Amino acid sequence: MSPRQHPLLEMKTKNPWHRPLIICVAIVFAVAVIGMVTTGVIQNRHIRQKYKYGIVLDAGSSHTSVYVYQWPAEKENNTGMVQQTHVCNVKGKGISSYAGSPDAAGSALGECMEEARSKVPTERQKETPVYLGATAGMRLLRMENQSASDQVLASVENFLKVTPLSYQGACIITGQEEGAYGWITVNYLGDNFRKAQRTMGALDLGGASTQITFVSGVEAQSPQDFIHFRLYGNEYHVYTHSFLCYGKDQALRLALSHRLRALPETTNSTLLDHCFHTGYRKQKDLSDVYDSPCVSKQGTPTGTFIHQGAGNWSLCHQHVQGLFNFSQCAKRSCSFNGVFQPPLQGTFGAFSAFFFVMNFLNLTSGSLDDAKQRLTSYCSTPWEKIQKDHPKVKEKYLSEYCFSGTYILTLLEDGYNFTSDTWKEIKFIKKIGDSDAGWTLGYMLNMTNMIPAEAPDRPPLPHSGYVAVMVLLALLLPGLLFLGYRLFRRSGSASRKQIV
Ligand SMILES: O=P(O)(O)OP(=O)(O)OP(=O)(O)OC[C@H]1O[C@@H](n2cnc3c(O)ncnc32)[C@H](O)[C@@H]1O
Ligand SMILES: [Ca+2]
Image (cartoon, rainbow, N blue to C red; front, side, top):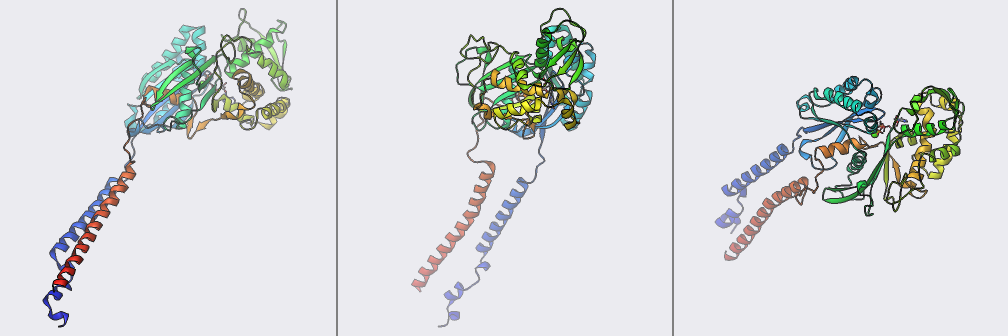
């Protein structure tokens, strides 16, 4: 009998797509696939990221900078999310220089505040916090003249209060806070907290103070030099010390005053300075040296002196060493001036003037001995050649690089106890990613509670992993159903064949 004549075999060769059940299953399957793809596309379409913003004013001794930060609105507590998007340097000197005309301190911030505001979308401005932190320049002014310092702070406060932003306050931060926030900044930017990896110490050299901060396993000898942090579920025992008057401008004043002491008290006497280049000669006011609580004086010195360079690094080094007291230490170990410092630990990020000066002198890499040799040759270069080689550099900075470089080497080696071996642990840095190394970011993270003490609980899979697994399973299931159906049919028809 031919297959055409047998009704059962005839049914077997019929096109299965004509069966209503198969058609239904195919339609449902197609709708499910289309639905899945559409949901995936809609769900993952590009959503315009919403950002939050924060502004911090760093009112330093030498100048004020305005920093704008931004971070994704829904990821506030994920570390590494805050980025610096803009910085504006306020024209003129630091706010402490307005002691004689405090009313002008606030309006001096105008241009930069306008620029910073323009970086924040209008609808976010009302909720954008603004903080001003003043550092060593204002600490010195407060020591000298509390009412002048209050008036300067009131002036900046009155100015910032009337901007459309959310003003949160202006204050003089302590040296310890300055050191700790600088340490938080470099480690936040290095993602060391979230990854629970070794932290980096922070070295900050300003105009009026300098800070050293690092994690130490040593028991606290002087509790005031230690801060305890619990960040992201990890404990940090951090040593920090700020040396007021040991920023590079105040150190230069101190050095000049030591040398002036040895001169006869006649006006316009010549001070021969080995930290300045031969050929450098300038008449300066005594008040520029003595007008600071960092410099001891009798009465109010007035008049002028001739500042003349003599370019000799080893003599300059000796003079600079004279600014520190290395002999007295009542604690187990000291940096200088009898200040406790535990043994150095780990790598260090050295920023602000540490970077400006060492970068100019090309000393950011190489050994300590190298640095000394190159500085010896730099300091002995005549002033005329230095000026010719660097016509675009500000004369004040240019004339001071020999002193500043020598001061930095002395502070790091004799002061903080870095050696030829540990020198390589110092990384001279300006920025990490797009953000400047400095205390301002750490300050804002702290004020806005953006680094939680505990790490937030996370689902075991990241979102993308979860979506991939679900899609894979969703595709696999109909496939398996179809395979099962085919197998079922095959075994069904085989048993029917046997019956036939
Ligand atoms: O922290 P405080 O002590 O309050 O001071 P500051 O915040 O004003 O200090 P900075 O780090 O801004 O600058 C440190 C010093 O470096 C100087 N400086 C800035 N840019 C420089 C450059 O390019 N070359 C050399 N020196 C520079 C500046 O005048 C200060 O004396
Ligand atoms: Ca500073």
